[in-house]
Every structure is written in C-alpha cells, then in structure tokens.
Image (cartoon, rainbow over all chains, first blue to last red; front, side, top):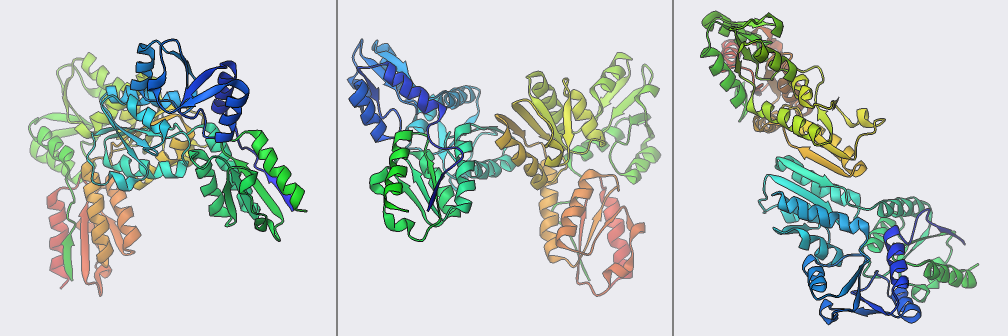
Length: 276
Length: 276
C-alpha cells in the first residue's frame, strides 16, 4: 500500500507562531489549551514548563498568562490587564481580525451574524467583541424566525467550510438591504481543505489526524468522508486499526492545523512497520 | 378561455410618481424617455405638453427639465444645474439609493461592481456616481480575469433577477476579503417577478406586456418563458396573434413597471372580443 500526504496539511501560521511564543515564554501558563492538540500541549509542559489553567481568575499580578490561538473573551482580557497580569497574546492574527470586525460592525449599528460553533472558544471570543450582541448560527435554518436589522455584518469562524458559509450568505442577501460578508475563513483552512478534497477523491482509505475537539480537523474529516467512504479521524497512531488497510492501494493522510509533524510521522512509521 | 392577471403587475411606485410629476409640470421636457413606454410618453405629450429631448445640452437657463425615472449621469445633472436650468427630478428613489451607494463606496475605497446592463440609462447614471470608476457586469464570467481590491461593494440594477445577482455574489465572496452586497433590486420588481412565476406555472399561455426596451419587462418575460413555453412579450394589443390562444384554458397576464393600466385593459378587451 502506498501512503500519500495531502499537498497541504497540518500546522498553520497561527499555530506555529503560538508554539514559538510558548517556547519563548518558559514557566508561564496558558488560559485554556494553546492549540487543540493535547499531545503538543503535554510536550510544551514537559520541555518548556508552559502550564495550562482553565480559568483566567487564577492569574495574579505579575503572572505570565499566554492567550491561546483561538483568543479569549474581551472582558476576560480586560480583567487580566486590569489585574496587572503579564499578558502574552498568542491569538492567531486571523482570529484577531474577526474580533475587530465584530466590534466595529456592532458599534456601526449592524446586526452581527457569526457563522460558527457557539461553544467553540474562538467564537465565544469573537462574539464578546460585538458590543451590542451577536447571533451565532451554523445554518440558515436558525435565521428563519429572526428579524434582524436591515444592515447585517456576516463573519465566519476561521476554520469553516466556505460552501456552508455561502449557504447562510445566500439566505440573508435577498432578505436584507445590505449584507456585508467578511471572508474570515483563513487561507490555511482553504488550502488544507482543497488538498484533502483532491487526495480523498483518489485514495481508497483516508486518515485525518488531529484533536477530537479541533474544529478544522472535523471539517477536513467531513470533506474526506464525502469523497472516500473509508475515512478515519484519529488523534495519533494509537487510534489505528490495521484492518482498515486490508486490500487498499492508496492511503491518503491529512492533518488539522494543530497537529504537529512528529505525530504525523509517528502514524506513518507505525503503518509502514505493519503494512507492506 | 379564462384570463387571469398576475397578483402583482404593472406600474410601480417610481413610475406612478414620475407620471404625477410630469402631469404637474406641463410645458416642460424630459431628457430621455421618462419611462420605458412610448405610448404613455405620447399621452403625456398630447395631454400635458411634456416633450422629449435626447440631449441635456438643448436646455437653456430657465427651461424646465424633467429627469427621467432611471436617473441621469452625475456630470449631466451638474451641468444642467450650473446652466441654471430648472431641474425637476423624477428619478425613482429606488434608483437614487444605488447612485448614493456607488458614490459613498467609491469614495470609501471599495471596488464598485454593478450587476446590470452597461447600456441601460439607470446603470449609466449609477456608474457615473462611482467617482473612482466602477465595473459593470451581467455575470461572473466577466470578473474572471479581473483583479479587484480586497474590499468590494456590489450593487444591482433595480430590475434584475435576484438569482442572477446571487450568481455574481457567490463568485466574489470566497475570493475577496469583504464583499458588501447591497440589495438594490426594488420590491416592486421582486413582487412582480414572484407573481409572474406563480402564474406562469399554472397558465398554458402567458402575455407579458411592456416596452421592448424595458429591462424589468424583459426579466418578467424570461421568468414566464422558463415556466410556460407559450409566453409572449407584447407592447400592446396590436402585437396579439390570436392563434396563440387556440385550445388554451388559462391566459396569464403580467406587465412591466412602465406599462399603464389602460394598455393592459386594451389587451384584455381585444382578446375577450375575439376569443370565447
């Protein structure tokens, strides 16, 4: 069986940048997981003493708090700064952008609609910047009984599929006077999605490697599954089931933006050691 | 054969308003046809001495110039005012709006894209307000080799089909950072289009009455033709061919926004006098 990596996969600019920031800030803590990959976070703890806390309230004046790639809520950031915590911002610049848009559009009197997962930290953060509130939806169905202002600003979670985003845009545009559509889906997401699409069309088994709670990995897996029925979302080599590869010719591999190369390499090495 | 009028058809708010303005301003002239219906224009000339000129240069100081419903170019309007011509503005307010948007967006640094017919007076007018220029297209194909700014303002001719407008929006949104979509298709257009859609689905012959150069009539005809193969675009009763009605049960009728009721009534009377 041949193994082929997607043309684009894995670590994006924002994740690489955040890991560099963490490595440069030994003996600190992140508020929430820096990236959605528990194994990489364990490595940062072991090798760089970068801890993890699940509340911003534990930081005291003088503590160093690293803000995760997905960003945090506006009020929490303000609280940290007011408490003289030493804030090191590892928010991905592609997430800072929709935060700014949410704030500007909300202040300019637009109804802010965010296409994304309400429970995801990135979206909790972006929403908090819409000072007059925002509506978070995952499809146009959730907009059907809602009356918005005649001017709407539409923002997407950075890791969403563009086709799904367009579904929401297509619902809103004919119904309102102005719909200001911000294309906030990041380029790495686009490129990884396009590459997994191409590869999953020709592979007869596909592995998508990434954290189970990683939004962008889930999107990659969804695209893969649409084109290759034998697609599997795994976190690392321990999730492999070698029966998947029986009578297969081409195993395609993609990985989410928070998946480090060393995990991908472990998966490849493990398959190669067991399968011809 | 039964004859049924569409639930919404004919004169829109802007046309009614313009005719009222013309009737209230006897012994004046319009620059270009006030509305796209030559017979109504002849009536205004006969009954109200409202003439028609094809150049704004003929107006002299003190002359009364009526601006047509479709609007005129910014520079021409300024020239008329500078020459102390008494300008009576019958531009439809739904056309004034896209003119303002074109100017504001152009001045705010957006690439202005207008979805419409470059040769139509409304679009010539709207385009003239985009002080830094605008691109006029009728489909996304015309955008394929063009690099625009990252911020785009998209404006539609008031009388276009919303599905065709969405085709252009769907091309632009994934390719640029911000696409500000202004829904400038007017409600009367929406309502007349929806009504002709419903009627043409059940009628076995359809008549769409309106000027041959009327954009909105052409759109109504296109929708009708998609649903009822025996659809005919006529200007008045003289265009009727009675063979169309042979063995037909339901004749649906719609009319463009510039078609006066008296023309529609003439068509109905003529059919009823000849057909059972």
